[in-house]
Length: 359
Ligand code: MG
Image (cartoon, rainbow, N blue to C red; front, side, top):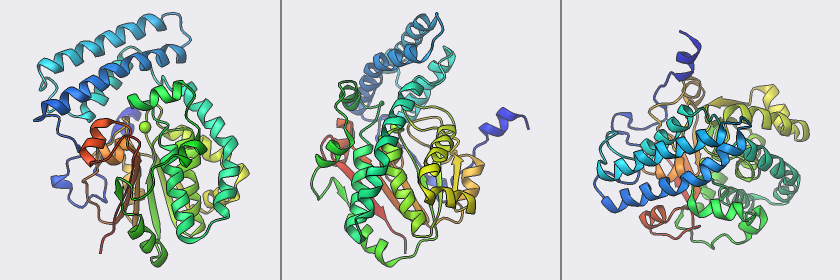
């Protein structure tokens, strides 16, 4: 098997309860014209900020020309899909995300958000010691709540959602301010009490964590949770995209970040040495995820897990919100699109803590 074939091999995620009937998409873009129009607008409007990032990330002199051609190609497809929604098969957010990635690849843009991800990772790393110190002052339910609220606050750093791109570009995304301004409970979906009860009385062995965005989202949100799980003695698998999608962490960046963090935080250094912490590429290249197609490494590492944590609007709400698993599952996300808010009966910037225990 050659290298690219090996990298592209996909298998079904082994913790799916019903792989035969698994459908990743939550929203129905096929039979609901209003939903379809909403998302075609989202993708069309997003092209401007995406192509600006593409040009900024690419020092070659023809970058602006390629970015313009890429935007034109993508826009033409969006206009075609407005008239012929079935042109690429049943339309979904997965299909639109994949189309966008294909356009970028065709015009030789590999990772338009790489510089931004690096800047945001560095900024978040500077705040990490303060966040960890604060967490260490909490115990029990209060600690768990602080961890969950940190994940919600970090998850606002999302360059795929129209509402948050503007906030970011105006410099209005401050982790601590966002966390202070989170909605009061009960949240849009609020299973926190059930989660806290289970957390207090159950001894988990191994967690798999699907992470989302770079910067505050991973470093100040998911990473402190990973640390907490390691301190509780769990084996932890952190899985990130294999290839770039917007400002999502990719596996190579995850490895680098954990290496940096392990130098200042011994929990991670010890866990890496002991094989308690594993970092695996998910096989994914989109900001949403189809769990019928993950990397064989992720499948192998996940098989014996008894806790699954899926974070972010793309992976936990727009896809997989209704997916059921064979182990306890926690889905955490901030809502950053009106259509998702409407579907869940909430508001923009409301948050979701969905916990589905088994047995
Ligand atoms: Mg993302």
